[in-house]
Length: 256
Image (cartoon, rainbow, N blue to C red):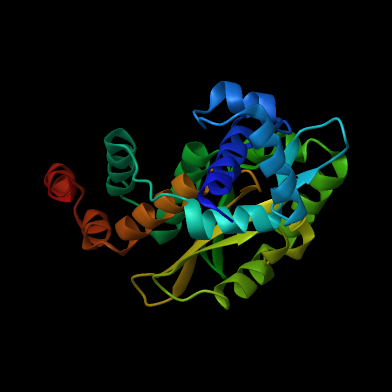
């Protein structure tokens, strides 16, 4: 894939992530600064489809990224993205103010991740798992279909088994992106992707942070979210706050 085609693939993914509508050449030339003609855009989109990076649902429609297209984007094109200062401070404050035990911390982390990502968040270890964000997930057009809802519900029914399979595929400290058919949760592999990170709890148990969303999810932001939350979960600050909540202001200053 040449540089121009990379820019077109990125533009298609950016546009489709926002709209969930197949993307045509006209939209790309009007909304993205590609500095090439519509004819060239159409030609490159056709070539990207031939190579398996884009898919056209029918002749008169625009194109959508394939699993292969998303994988190429994630591995070759996607820029690193840092959380905004406001997002970092919100996460720091919410995590550090918790006074309860580990299960309370884990549950609140799932709720925070779901609200910031618009995805279904899973946190914890096999005996202490929490999920939050079903409402956010079902708000996405990909999951309006009743069949897709049933698949998600079935996947959550076997959450402990699924998380066990996921943890077997990832090392502590690692963050992985599973796209479409790569998704370890096979019930939802056709429609969704997953960003997963593993960390160790205070007791040394291997635990998971995961976000499940449509394949057009914001991969860079979601990866950044998990990496930052993992840092907080591993931080001595989390342990200290359970012991002494009065240290919150100093800890927040130190983390900034």
